[in-house]
Length: 207
Image (cartoon, rainbow, N blue to C red):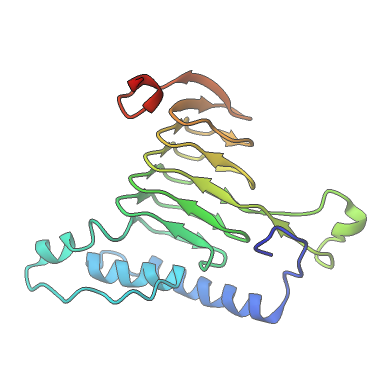
């Protein structure tokens, strides 16, 4: 499955983990206005991050600050398929109604901003219906990678096999079907390059 090969989605171990992940998402979504510490605990349960939590600081603001450089900020509700294959960098903001099908590895870098209602589709199916066979046939997937300092607008759909380059922006409502070069603004369905982003972060501009 992780290699992108055809696999049997109804495997007992896979289904057990999907059930675990759904319960972890339900717990996160039900937390409401819980403390930052509690939300981080629940988030780490979704993605199976077993790092020990830092000691509790009695000052609420200082305790919240402990997680600024360690974990993303996630605004529920969120729905993740497996959790084990979803990696998110520090300083990243994931807005509400995020949907993640992490059949294969899905990575999000640092300082990334997501609008609401974003969908990351790492799962896919065979095009040949004779192989697909509805629920009876195999499934497959491709990795998705979103690099550092990217801004994903609201209601964007990112399809399997896509890499979105560092410092890029994806316009709201776009469907990303192919790789996005670093430091570019893309939009549309399917997305097309609108323009290059002028920034001191681009090593090509520094030259």
